[in-house]
Length: 422
Ligand code: GLV
Ligand code: MN
Ligand code: MN
Image (cartoon, rainbow, N blue to C red; front, side, top):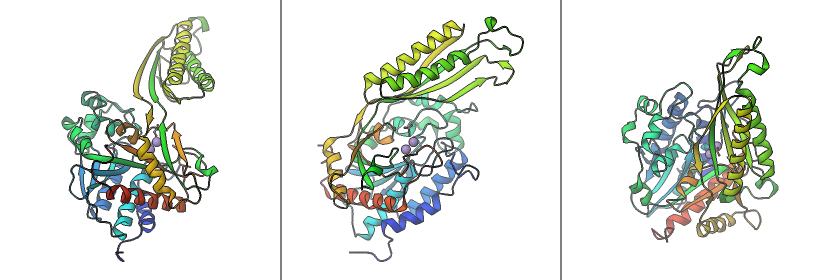
């Protein structure tokens, strides 16, 4: 039975997207700085809460600040879908928000189709997925999964020295409540995250929607190069302990090692102290982001960078400490669930062979996959650009994503509870 007053998924998507897109957008760059507990984050959380409530969903924040909007009472056998609303610094509009907006639009689409879920359905928003403010990615899902201790999370600091605990408290959430939530995860039968593709694989096919196969192992390592501050004009070269020199070696080594191991290694963030043009620095802190198709290749890249950095540091009389700030193992999404999604997506696909793709990008779905049967859908990205204001997906492909997600949720909701958990 169709409800004439409920918009179709694509119509709902356009309205929701138009509401969310301006929130926190930098008028200069067109990008976003939506990071956990900042002003833009408050705006998008309020937007989500209102959008979900206006659909009759019951919105709750969990102990870690993640948002859950329930259709039906929370409980065992739940189907969950969602993503995140935070961004990288000067990030794009789609990474995260596409999954959240598509999930809300899919709820409208299911209602329009007359679906009455016999199991609870949750739309989720995970906190600080990018680690853009506090450095650890997927922090909200990691906390819920018990993969980071509440003590460590509370003490994480942003660039201004504000702790997660203080920022969370200022945003009206209790940092003492942080921690694992095995009961909430045990209630989930399945989690599906729809995401903009962060590559061009789908663009080379007729398919607007693909399915995830795996997430590469990846992590973030902090390298602190400690030198000796001195005058840039008067200090003889032989007398310097300049931390920028081994830092530069490490950056170049990362590139060479990534090429050797068909991996990715990037140093995109650094802090130079005191950061004066005419003062040799006392400290360079730099962050290595490394990813590879398998654990051995990742280990080879990271240990190679450590070695090159260590060698150069000794040569230049500089101290070096390296610490892993986050580490995510290889995720292979459950084949049965993945294949079922591909079969459902195939029913609307423009040709045979729905693409099943691995990715080097991290996701909350990757964290949850160790605890809950989990799958991902990707929506085509014509340029492949992501983590940039230029990130984009065609409206028609976004609509195809909403319909695919609605089809997948309808299929899952119609199956007996606990089936996905085997
Ligand atoms: C998150 O998007 C990441 O892969 O860094
Ligand atoms: Mn991202
Ligand atoms: Mn994302």
